[in-house]
Image 1 (tube, one colour):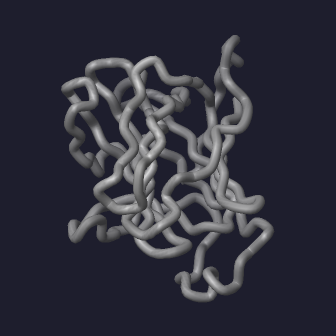
Image 2 (tube, helix red, strand yellow; image 1 turned 180 degrees about the horizontal axis):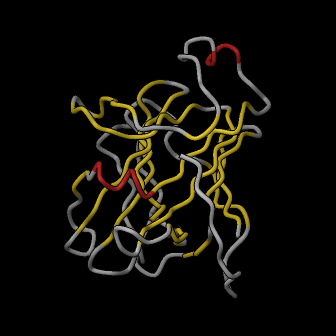
Length: 194
């Protein structure tokens, strides 16, 4: 779904590196990107879960208790414009050969398996340039309005298992931005742009 937008540049919107994508090993995930203020009682976050070497699934979760517990909400997928622009370099053939074909362009949700549970999300192949933006509709008939995304620092993980989800760091570094971009240099990294 192609979405058009108009927004005024906001002072203080971050543009710059956010670090490596942490979902590297099967079962590992990253949870430091939020669709709402990450310090509120109601929090909506993006989880990127590595399903196999070279392929992850991006889906969205909501917490009503300040981040103590999260529930997967497939309805949040309709807020996200997930766009795969094409392959990047270096493209590691040893891993890429084992991945399913990737269609470039605006993505539609697929069904994946996360810890034995079926989850709707966006396919997230490594070695591709990917842009993620959030749009909401003020009412059922109104236009789509772009909303910012948030990064909030988490504590460093202590292992590489599916039981090692990074933990929210109170008072950690925080950035607000319009678009999340994934790309590859020596490994998969993220940056924000506004």
